[in-house]
Image: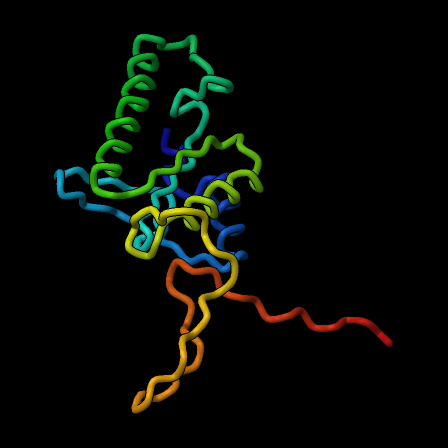
Amino acid sequence: MRANRRTDTKPELALRRALHRLGYRYRKDYRLDLESGRRVRPDIAFTARKVAVFVDGCFWHACPEHGSKPRANEWYWGPKLIRNVERDRVTDAALILAGWTVIRLWEHVPLDEAVATVVTALSTTSATGQAQPGPPQPGPPQPGPPQPGRPQRGPAQPGHDQPRESPAPPDDSLS
C-alpha cells in the first residue's frame, strides 16, 4: 500500500491547478489543530475564509456510485472502509464546530463542477470565515469619498484567498 498517495492525487492536482489558474491561493495538506484537540489535514485549505476542501477517492471513502468492495481479505477491508467513512463524518463535524465550511468532492466529479463548487463556497464566506448574508455583490467595492488629512491609497492588494486578475494575453496576430 506504499504506492497509494495520501496527497497530490491526480484529481486533487487538477483541482488545485484550476483554482490557482483562477487566481485563488490556498494551503495544501495544511494541518489544522482544532480546539477540540482533533488534528485535520484538508487537501486544500483556504485559511482566511475557513474553507476546507477534501477530494475523496471512490475506493478509500466508499463512494456509493463507484466504490468497490474487495473480495479478497474482506474481513480486513470491510471494517477499514467503514472506519474511513466514520472518520470523515467526525472530521466534518469537528471542522463545522470550529467554524469551517467543509467541501467534500468525489474524485469522479468533473473538474469544472468541482471548481464551481469551491468558488461558490468561497464567495459565500467572508474573509473571517463567516457566511455572508445574501448573494455576493458583483464587482469590487467602490471607494468612499476622500477624507481630509488622510493620504490616498491605490487599490488594495488581492488577499491570500482572493482571485487575482490576470494580465491580458499578448496579441499574437501577425497583422
